[in-house]
Image (cartoon, rainbow, N blue to C red; front, side, top):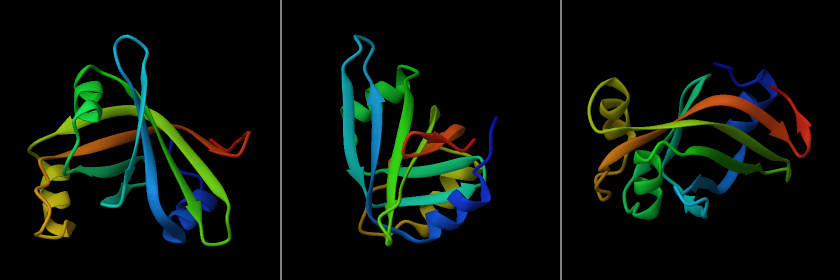
Length: 125
């Protein structure tokens, strides 16, 4: 498993707006969503709260890989690719419930396990 390069870890703290999470259905159909309830759990795992997933949930449960795309305040875009897991209990799920605003249901924590990191076409990790 890869970890976020320091430049990307710092950029994460400077991100602006929602992230884009992309998954793929079993038939190859891509699915992209905006998400605002996100957190860096560790240098090798990013978490997106499942508040209102539908196709995204089904794709993750069908072992889809995913991409998380974010942009910084100075307009630099970063893409993190990896395997997704769907956690409804355990340490990461409990952590997500701690930082998630009470107004959201937080059905599960979608965890992106970092495998590749890009800034534009440049592979960083």
